[in-house]
Image (cartoon, rainbow, N blue to C red; front, top):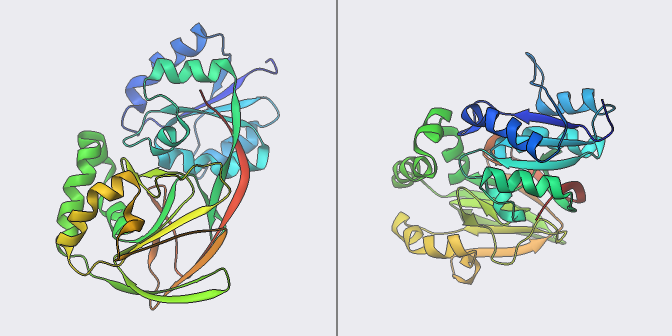
Length: 290
């Protein structure tokens, strides 16, 4: 094995993972990228696999969606191995944030060219995330959206399940502690972003990047679901902070408490619950980019 061998980790259960494996192998070989494949065994995570192979590879190529990347985050941080992203998931929001093309051949070519940038990761109660953490509506959506629905319907699956949940959603009480102040609020959702995109193309903030060393928070303090529908164009552009019933700010750290524990969604996966402390891990992972 040479020092330029990549560890290839493909999630066969991601939307395009199972059907793309042969194409990925061919494209990597065509671009002169030597690789070894590995899959987690029972009880293992992608991070465990990365840690076990750290001495024999010089980079990690992950094929899947944002949840797959999330599962590899801890291993990437601890080993310092560079990350190549193959966007084979449903939404591929992190790929969009850093500019990795959604076309598979073009994404492999980005890795072959070898240019990397250090990107930040957010942390929630010590759990790393690439894109966005959320409490409230989006966490409920993550719990309700099955793998089968994401595979069959893609981003349409998000919209179908979201519409059903929205009709029955209710505000909850939360307390934010950040930058020396404490704020109480009633909200439908609180989102804390490291990158720009999440949820199939929604934006945390129009100017957010995964390299600015900041967390971008917004809270949807709307009192009727139809008001949220009016907000949707702004949510896609990342300009929701201009609305009176949306609280938005940037910070290095924030703690969120709720009256009863609520699940916290990290990159589409429910990983922890409130009370939750968010911090930013600057320049945590090197990522191949155009």
